[in-house]
Length: 335
Length: 295
Image (cartoon, rainbow over all chains, first blue to last red; front, side):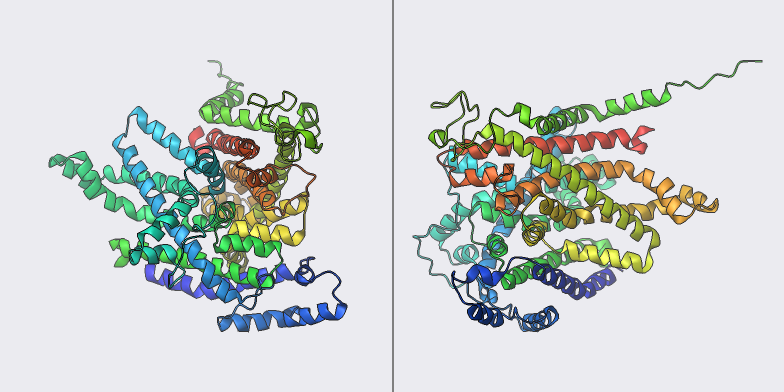
């Protein structure tokens, strides 16, 4: 039953992506702003403008533009960026790893903070301090990631200047790495000086993305922990004389994990969507920051490629969460 | 014969009072914060000590009055063009309130209509609405509203349209699911049995039961609308330069954050207070209106 549901969702992926492509494409074509007008020097002749327009295929009817773009995308080619004058696929390959690393780091931080807060809350269950923990979680949740970004930037970048507030790494550092996954590669190859410099830059944006998500994790996990602790098996372990922390960690925690992953996993898309602005605020060189520039410059091919990339990541994340939940839960695995 | 006891007439007000009590501190704090926000927006011309656009280059980047070098004429200091920060904050509240009210209302109307439609008709109507929601949900919402606002062009209207076009799905998804649930209830079957048309059933029976849910959603949506307006003006594709907004103040402050951190700090404080106020009000109202908790 459960597997059938996953297959049904898989089948819906191509039409959804097609829908996304249509919406972006049509949306951009009704723009009054002209990408060509923004790249030509003043005083260019009509003929020059016409030639440029033809070069990017903007002189053809919309349907034909869409068909040729779709055929291109099918071959893995997203066309050329108008403002950056490079292939979109190359730009994506260069910038996407930065965003993925940032999102991964943020997720790790969020899960760690969330789990700690939830466990603290459950240990304090029934006391006055539990109320304070819940209230703190409420505040974390109410303030969205980009506001956290601004607050952290003011606090730790300006008032107490402990951390850098822009870029992915210090420009003077020599990056002789093979991939664009700087952090992962430097950690794997033991280049801890580079990893440290990277983390130094990433910690504030990652924390900004992590805080609201940590609140979601904490809330979900605590609710599941409360429910699991009241189950018979936890009571039995109690009767056998195991200590409460031991029961919480060994018996209750693993069972509380499933609903948390199921409900919280989907929210990772929120975190991913948040990278757009948080990258902008910290001038971090990922695809989110690039997307805003692309929109400002009316760079059609780049916007299309970026939106499609985000859509693929969103859909893949949702599917991955479903899959993990199915694998984690023995009832669903054999259902 | 014993006199019949007349039902106490005071039932509705006392129930309302009890409800307001149940709303508790959240309702009171939330309502107070939102009231302040709305009042500031309405009374902006009276409250603002200066014209928010008036430049005074000789007194640019003044710190707040209580800090060293501050000028009592500019209580919260001035920005890099010498404009009064306090006045700009006050006028920005106008933009925020306008966008929040109009955008949330339209998103709700469109979302509720489509949700009711999809939830009650089912079949291909439901398929069309649900698949559109799927497509919409595959976009990063921030990016979609940025693209939309850029496409439509600068101005308050484009901000509002961008928010409505992105956020109708929030209402549509929830209303669709809830309509399906409510339609299986006995009261809906009874209403159908006495021959109510589908439109009447939805309007008279289903919709009133969705009100508590909608109030909460509406409050959340107003908070989101305030934030999206901030985001769009921060990125620089919202309203033109002569309309003060918290977002554009933050963007300007970001440029000179080391020299004048307060320019960025004050609008951030205003946004946080507004968003928390709207959310608390929504939470409180839900407690007041929820029929399950009322009984």
